Length: 338
Ligand code: PMV
Image (cartoon, rainbow, N blue to C red; front, side, top):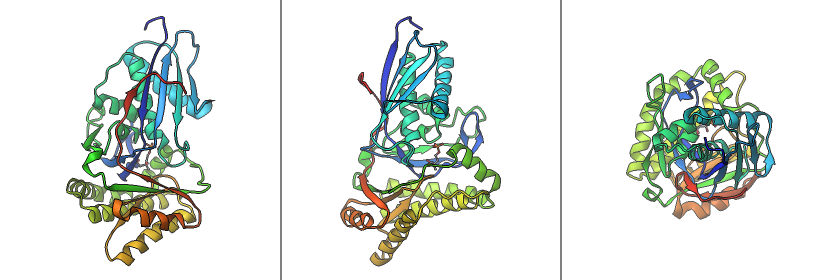
């Protein structure tokens, strides 16, 4: 690598999984048991600049202006080791990253974070990776990051190979495919931070949940049905399947020993309210989902979004409701300073 510092910046958005990834068959390579499907979101983003600098004696990581140590620095540095191994050099880096949303809040900052880091680090290292290779690289940082490379509706194929060559995400439809789809994100006040990292928690589920095997058997059918519903923009079917999948994910978490309970009473009140709104309407006008966190994503169509948003905002413990839409994928950005 050149003696002078080299720098590149990348921007990426979080995604919300409609079919969840939860459990890996290979921990070192991050190879999941099942394929997953997500929507990349607009408005939220991570921006990351990586500068490889021969003067540095170790990696440094600034997140929202604050120097990181411990776990966050170790995982960023470990990820940079992979990039350095591919590019065949050993220069350390300064990584500066900012989120325009609360980090580690259950809004998937690891997805946008590692997608932006994969893009910025590989560019700064002089690697010009294909979208599939970038997705494979991001996967090593955080599984869901493999999907945030792409905009709109994205499928991450689990693949079957032991070396992970066939395990990467690909875009199914651009954001413009379904512009009237809205994700109302009920931000829960004082949402607790995760007690256990997702990568550890999911393996605990695989090892102990008595319903995990059954969930795995159901998933191919649900994924196929969901892809069909998205392709033809069948909102009620998509929302029903989204809730069915979320309930299945929550069930394997709750039956994990010791149990994994990501929700708080306000989150449960949002789920109940969406069920009630659908009942009152006599049709499925919205579908909820959540990840390993307390916030709840409620998918609906633009024409119902105003009323539903006001309704959700009135729930005790809901701090605010964001209205997001399908957004674009990760991309390089011009030099930028955190
Ligand atoms: O990518 P990770 O390691 O943060 O795990 C994400 C797991 C879920 O968000 C719960 C599901 C998913 O597919 O995004």
